[in-house]
Amino acid sequence: MLKILKYSFYDLMRSRWSYVYFLFYLALGFVLLFLNNDVSKAVITLMNVIIVLVPLIGTIFGVMYYYNSKEFTELLLAQPIKRSSIFLGQYFGVAGSLTLSLVLGLGIPFVLYGLLKSDAIFDFTLLLVTGAFLTMIFTGLAFNIALSNENKIKGFGYAVLVWLFLAVVYDGLFLMSLIIFEEYPLDGFSLAATMFNPIDLSRTLILLKLDISALLGYTGAVFKQFFGTNSGLIISILMLSLWTVLPIWRLTFMAKRKDF
Amino acid sequence: MIQVETLYKKFGKNEVLTGLDLHIQEGGIFAILGPNGSGKTTLIKAILGMVIPNKGKIAVLGKAVKNQWKYRHEIEYLPQIANFPGNLKVKELIRMIKDLRQKSSEEDKLVSMFGLEPFLDKKLATLSGGTKQKVNIVLTFMFDSPLIILDEPTTGLDPAALIRLKELIQKEKEKGKTILVTSHIMQFVEEVADEIVYLLEGKIYFKGSISELLEKTEQSDFEHAIAAITSPMSNA
Image (cartoon, rainbow over all chains, first blue to last red; front, top):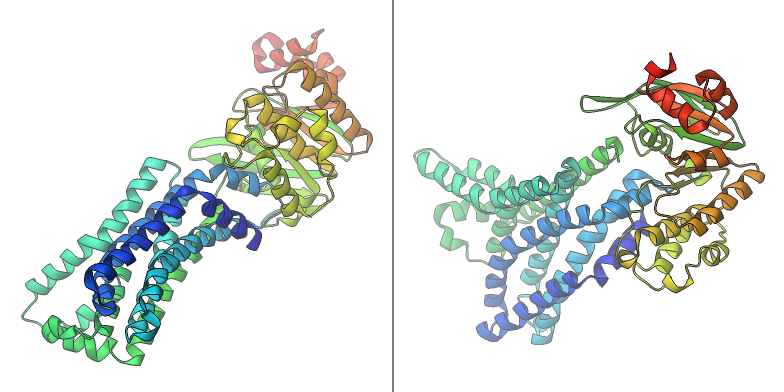
């Protein structure tokens, strides 16, 4: 698997898009720090960008890479390599290079600005960790969708729909259900609903770490009670890990059964 | 060398292989023939483990291949359409495959045999179809494995390259290897093949030497004999 990972990784590192992605974050980091003049505030703005953009890029890159490397995959399938290694190697190649672009692109400006001496270092690290998780999760979902759809247009469409649902529609449905059932106690429901969407989960996790939960009112207090504690943090990280592992597991399962 | 027992495969509603049995003994060149869509490539891909059969057993070198991958060390495969990652250079592709297989190889000899030196530093996406096929051939023949599977090896080759390919196949045969080849160029098949395996409607319709085929179909030349199988009315 490591060999496939190496080749996929190099292949992506040589492609222009990894650099564009890296430079985008680099520029974003510098601009935000320049405009905000404060690491903590920059982290909040950054969160809003990352929460939406990272899943989108993960999804699109994942689908694109899978379809573009079809020839490479077919070549590898005839070689003495385990099937699951081929797909896992490619997956980790894509997810790894995207994560690297994200971490380096944002890390460099923040470190230069004096992150290491500021108190925001923990928040910033959490931001990068959730960013990495979101990359892994959405690249995994994208690979699953691409593997199940021979038709590129369909695969691309479904992948973008999944992103749109989790990033936008889910929140809408969530809010509407809160309004409709406002007479009932909704703490448990909203906690569970947040857990089932990796994007919401990441957002809540960061918001609460940033100590601005007062903005969220009563629910915020409930959330704070849950997510603010160490066990809440651990459960959230576990949940994100589960979100990462499930698509990877299905990927290996599907890869064993597919014809090429 | 290869044992295939009651192999079934369908893609959606399209039943491609319907209870195919095939035994290929060690050594010699076997041509797998059949009309378009008769399941030649599916059979080959099933042997390679790229297509998962619905039913049936395949064994290569005495071992069942289901969910296995190590046996592919013993197989060289030339795919029908040379689809390579376009952003790699020829040199890099050769190095990569060598790295993946971890076996001694003799690519230099083959590269000069097919005159590929000027293309080594070119990206695969910029190569012509025939040149890609030559690269394909180099990648297939550069290792020393007992089983070689060639799916339409002649596609796009110029006459000089075709002659070299035939020499190469004969040389490998002399080493005692087993070679499976599919082709629609009957002249090529007639020249190289020791035995014919004819697939029709997902089963083996005929297996034997060319002279046996001529006898069976009561034809005097090979191309007509093959055509006669495909249209059974004229065969009657």
